[in-house]
Image 1 (tube, rainbow over the protein chains, first blue to last red):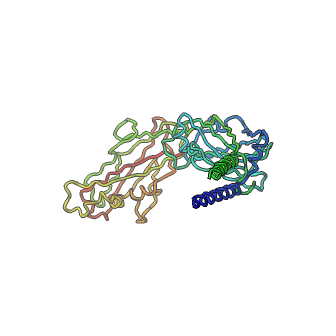
Image 2 (tube, rainbow over the protein chains, first blue to last red; image 1 turned 90 degrees about the vertical axis):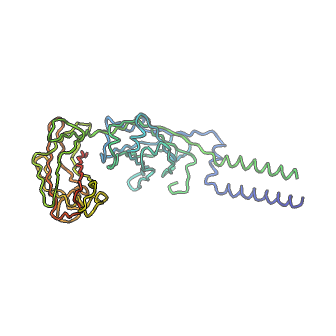
Length: 186
Length: 208
């Protein structure tokens, strides 16, 4: 009986210590305070609202064809900062096959001339179907925005299997709060 | 004892709630929808054999040489192929010509064939097949073949490993551009190839 009590006490102490260490290791405890303290608006908008890529205007892809680059803004229209955390895409028509032959590069552009852009993702467009986690360069404060640059191209080594394929794609961007991470540019 | 168990339960409950609060975060997803992408079509090549008037996707037995012996020339004055193309949405920029080959060993084996396994290393025979004319659209491009193995000859081995690129594209429609070939079986070819058949495939490719 005495051993059982000692064991139980030791277990209790270890549980409390583990909890304390776990809480101390968290990056942003303030998030909890804000979210529980008052009702806040968490929202973003993309600009422009029209599709970025239009094959009629942009032209068709073929092996080693010119890259097509589009910029768009991610605006913080809420009350708290956020950071980009995820991209994913949905394909229609012959999308999955064509997307496997297209490459995509997503950059978060810097502010001003001195700041270098950050590469968020580069790879096949089809990989976005599964969704990819990214770490945005900058925490975007309320009423501010960041610019993303998306470039799409077809590799020189792409084969005949892609000839004549067309697709429509929806590209989704997810941001999250709290925006802090271990990297710089918090 | 009951108090201790109650305390453990309470601590666990608090820990669960606190942990959930710390891990909670907001997220928002927006979509740029309706983006359209399309890949062009470069069209495709049509080919016609010298002894027929029908466009096809492939032809066979254009150049046939029998009973070759070392030093023989095969000018193939009559034999040629005509090339044209069906248009696509993208105009190709050039034509590439290369080849592939294999060697067929005779059955039964000739006693004097000192290498009954040339089919397993066809490059050996390809290096003895010298290209003496490589004429496309009226221009002889034999000098454009890179001497890949540095033996001083332009052979099918060289052509396979170093295709001739940047050639003008064929016309669209039924107007043909002709390709002609002349071949010499090297004087240096030894008994290794007696009775063997060199099976050559010429490959024409449109490039963007």
